[in-house]
Image 1 (tube, rainbow, N blue to C red):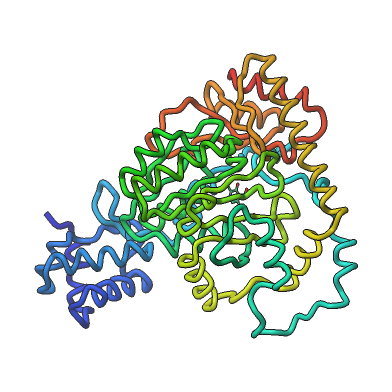
Image 2: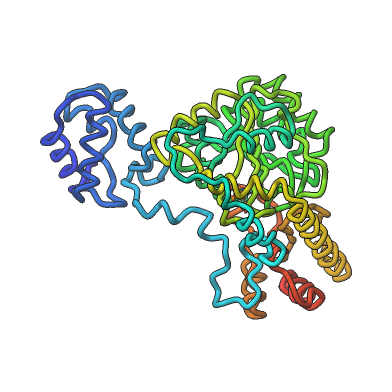
Length: 449
Ligand SMILES: Cc1ncc(COP(=O)(O)O)c(C=O)c1O
């Protein structure tokens, strides 16, 4: 039975419709949403009802529903039918649930950011820049040649193509847009970085989670996922957020073999968000299958998040798509910033500072891990800026720590729906300074809460 609102919507569609193609129908409904005739949460009539009313086939209307879903205008996955999506959905994904918002924490360990005191100072770098920097050109190559050489030299495999974008998140956003279509199966680690889940959900992907142990995706779980013939897999090769896991050469080879055997058309996108902050030797599936892997290397954690720069290198096809798409947007990443990065990458003092940061983070992690172990709380060794700590009840643990003026991230936005792992919190050691012994006691007590 149709409700009054749906009858009204049917009449409006019939009045406004100009053409009978799926695109025309989608455009008409899109315009009704923009001008407020359809409000967020309003239920659309069924595909069949619309088809009968305007005299087209159900499959034409279903196609227009697909177009609207792909543009984030409607939601077809609701139990109460197809509804108009809120534009605010942009801000209500998992990402926005991560930081603990309980009061103004004095020690905020919820955000995964590096310690500002451990980043290389920018002053001396800027001082050395001024002589040869031009800020005028629209027509130069998008990546500074010298920077490209430097990046190629550091790349874990020989990339078919390489460019720079505005951070790893920007790179992930472009990769999702380039590779993922509505209904595509996409593999991710479970748990993983919440924004990638937000991006994939918005793109209409069917997300398949893979278990993670201390060496990255578990081979059996990965093979099961590959048997589903995914379009793409998004993984973190090193210092996995939130668990700290890093691929070993053996695990890397096993994962590459499973892709080659079970899903040879799958693209693998590696989000190396920690870059030089990781301690173990970086390995990449690109060493085994350079034509299917895109590797992202961020400089945020090692050289500074506000540089907003990451390199993307690997398989030609998706990277060319990104370069072409960016021509309709920022076109290139500021060569001024590229120059700053190049100066930093070729500076011995900066290198020493990054090495020091790696050492300090590793000491903080070891200290906290040992102190938690003494309290009976076992964590994986891991590396990078985040620790994934098992707790009795994550909601209570976050509240208990907030009462101690410590902000941490609650675990559930990192997990896929249906993941039944025990509760966890993510504690970022980047900003963990001061009395770590006291901090460990507070975490241990919250973990038992
Ligand atoms: C897994 C992961 N990917 C990407 C990013 C974002 O990196 P960037 O600052 O380069 O955008 C982060 C930031 O913490 C991250 O943890």
